[in-house]
Amino acid sequence: MHFGFSYVGLIFLIMLMVPNIIWTRMQPKDYEKYSGNENKVLLLFERAGEILVSCTVLIFSDFNIKPWSNWSWWLIAAFVLMILYEVFWIRYFKSPRTMQDFYRDLLGIPVAGASLPVMAFLLLAVYGKNVILGIAVLILGIGHIGIHWNHKKEIEP
Image (cartoon, rainbow, N blue to C red; front, top):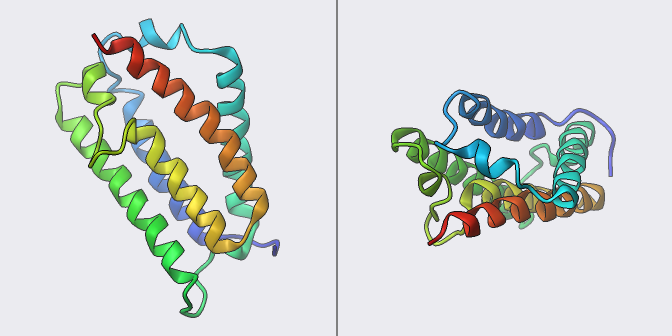
């Protein structure tokens, strides 16, 4: 692991944050009703994971583009997942923005808005051979996917 700025990490964070900032003005109908019921332990994992992932992905240069090798496929796969994440948001913003729209699967991926970025950052950790990011992503995934999975179960008939 090598300390230094990661422009790839910054790109991933921008791809993550921009739709979320827009979402704050375009939340699903009745979202407040569900967010008030969130499991506090999962919320703690989510918040800790967000901080750890955001910091780790920026302070290690391991995630920057390197000369081509078989490891490069991990980075490509991570970018593909982040592009799918953007597709998820475009589909959501064009929808009537209900809770069902927010928690629809994308290409068979359940709770895609939570799962795709977690999987992308995990693949980025593999690409960078960075155990710290891998652990941070697991913490984030437990909280973030857990919370959204619970929301999805609440809205299903």
